Image: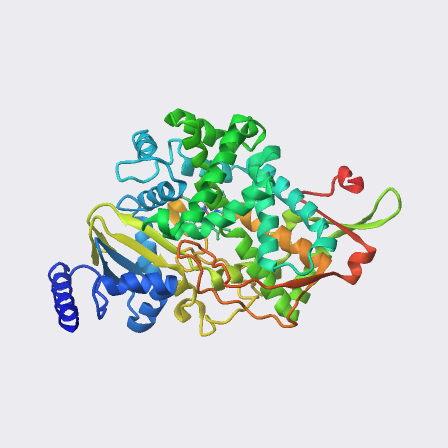
Length: 509
Ligand code: HEM
């Protein structure tokens, strides 16, 4: 066994040296080339890239994996350079293949989509043509669409939070927030026939997610229950479209549906194309909101600061029957509540485990310095840059809720080569404005109405060892059971939250 091990190691080491061009980024050594990094990534996930940076401190390096090279970029100037080379370093192929993998589209449907002329020669999305990515981008930057979606999501959240008085106590905080956010986001996007209103659809979604990382290797064995859950989701979306649910939905869903018809997809295949949309919509917002709540409620100074500025913003008024109410226009939170907004940005900086992944589609020199070979994958681990003392100062590792607040109480601007929770460049998350506004609205509703206390009596940050590598905000290993007590003030003054200035219908609604 020992000899076999030594021979294999020798062969792999030799292959590694012989096939590495010295103009490429320096290789980082592994006691077992090819296999060592695969195991490291499998076990340590995004933390593996942090470990390698801590050990080698390289601005860019090469990892050799079976069948591919990974170039890992850690320095802001090289990150900027890579973001400028959008033709030779593209997200599209990685994103498209990942989308195909977890949506479960048949090979035939994949070919129909690839041949549709909606992608550029390098496999990247053609933003000028209609494809799912391009459609989401266009709607998410269209102010009337954003307004309609955010209004609907905030209304749905307000309704959900109203029910907390009786139903919340004893629930896990992450689970409860995931439920409220899932309903709010999907109600906004899918309209009155939203499939996620059925409990079985929401629970199938949660059952499907952990299987995504296992889809590459023998999924029928390793991800069996996850695949069953995905089938239930596909059936739910198929009947949603068959019943005309999309006709009452957001314009984005209608355009996606039309696109599926243009591709010539059969109804079941067309239903599958909603799986990547749901993944983009649902995978990070609830986790970000929950971590934000954790930081706010575990530190009295943050809670006081956020609550105070929200109370200043909320307008008090009397209803027709003479009752005192308070109205919060959630469109104002980002600009008028600098501490809350900064705490959200710090939460994203502190917790984000984003690894931006791009395909190298032709041989290219990065910053005139490093050769990147066609067919390789370029990775930018957000965690390394988000915790870099060079970028953020000596306290880069600590949580400072005022990090983004300037002395005049405006927000500090930070470029996307340093602050990357939403990625950057051409493929920067199109849902960032929508989700930021929805998260801030939800957290404002809770902060103004409830005191959250952990059942254990002490706030302890959960570990995240089991979080999936593809997720940009990590899932905790265990939930935090909490008690939600209405604040003293909320007994006397009823709160209403809406998206937009106080309207007549709010008074009696
Ligand atoms: C806190 C919530 C969210 C976070 C942290 C987040 C983060 C990200 C990140 C890091 C990327 C990759 C960007 C890159 O590699 O350059 C991404 C892409 C994307 N996100 Fe989000 N996202 C969030 C919410 C949303 C929502 C609500 C939507 C709604 C539709 C959405 C839609 C997308 C889409 C479609 C892409 C792919 C973009 C492309 O390929 O061009 N995201 N997101």
